[in-house]
Image 1 (cartoon, helix red, strand yellow):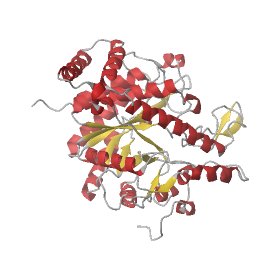
Image 2: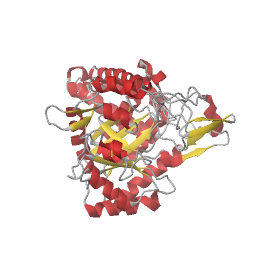
Image 3: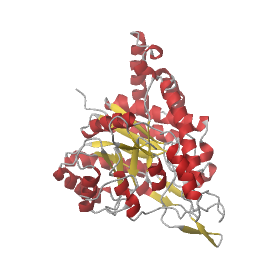
Image 4: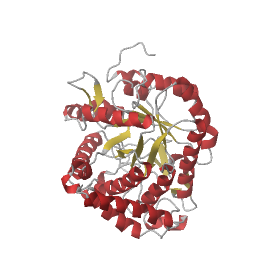
Amino acid sequence: MPTHKWTKNSWRKFPAMQQPVWPAGSALEDSLKPLSQLPPLVFAGECNTLKEQLAEAVEGRAFVLQCGDCAEDFSRCTGPDIRELLKVILQMSVVLAYAGEKRVVKIGRIAGQYAKPRSSDTEVVNGVEIASYRGDMVNSPEANAEARMPDPRRMLEGYYRAAATLNLVRSFTLGGYASLDRVQAWHRASLDALPAGQKYEELVRQIWKTMNFMNAIGLDPKHNPQLNQTTLYTSHEALLLDYEEALTRMDSTSGGWYDCSAHMLWIGDRTRQLDGAHVEFLRGVKNPLGMKVGPSHNADEIKRIIERLNPENEAGRLTLITRFGADRIDSYLPQLLREIKITGHKVVWTCDPMHGNTYQNEYGQKSRKFEDILREIHSFYEIHEAEGTVPGGVHLELTGDHVTECTGGSRQLLDKHLHLNYQTNCDPRLNAEQSVELAFELAEMLTPPAR
């Protein structure tokens, strides 16, 4: 374990991967100083409540639905865009809660997912080498040298966009938009568009019957806060450490440090070095944390990082987000589960079926197959059952829009269809219809055996 004292800037003494090369001069300091003085985006009490709910997922009493955009665009910080994403998350959560008969912990990749790791600092576009696009909080996706120049002022812009997004999310989730009677109407509109199938019709019929019964006995959503409100927690990859440090504050009640940029932060597969800056920074904040684990992992190092991030072995503190791919999960997950089970580490296990299943089609577009995403989730659950461990949830990249970025699903999208509405600047996302369809597929896995 580290012998040095943690401070919110002690990470600066460690190698930091995936950081932008900010321009020389005072621009970085001029952006960080006001950022460090702005109000927190989230509060310590909210982070602690999320940690308590994640602790239930460790024991299998809750299901974690973590989902949202691959990388948020500043231009899509609008009421309709936020509303449509929230609508899909709420639709999915109702299906999963009903089928699984347990709490669904809803965590959005929202209000801060403005930065992305890249495999190379530069790329060649039309024969010219320019900086890679690292998310709207760093530079612009426009393919020219000026637009790709990292600009620290974008971190301030990211804060304001996150604040505006959070403001609307809280208004929606607490102001009646998440009421069950509204969700019922959304389901009807969405599912009427899907091809008829018994598994859909039967579950929808059961949900409608339950809702109608609740209304019949006087549990009107309009007059019952439990049926009229919900909570969506926020999360993003804690990639830009300058930004995360600036938003880290001491809680006046507990005296602990919290990264107030989001309720939950995660470390990416490319930045989880044991002696790296990201592990050093996050070990000192009290937020719930996540860590991506891909095929390149070393089990012994993963165990040491777990001990570094969660030395008290606190349930709900750490979520391991596996991202192996449908063809490779059988080769990696069983042994990893056994290694962590032996140590007794209390972690939430969730499946990211997106990143290990990306391919580039003949048209030069990155895509993912719905069938591969579903296949990896199926394997995830089957392996956990075989190993006697608890599958805690899923981590998905999706949007509320009707994009054409992933193939398959009931509409049987093909590579040749993707140009119809391919919008992402980074990785391909499930569209609204595919997301709801995936929720029903998940529902079958979660449905308890008949009693």
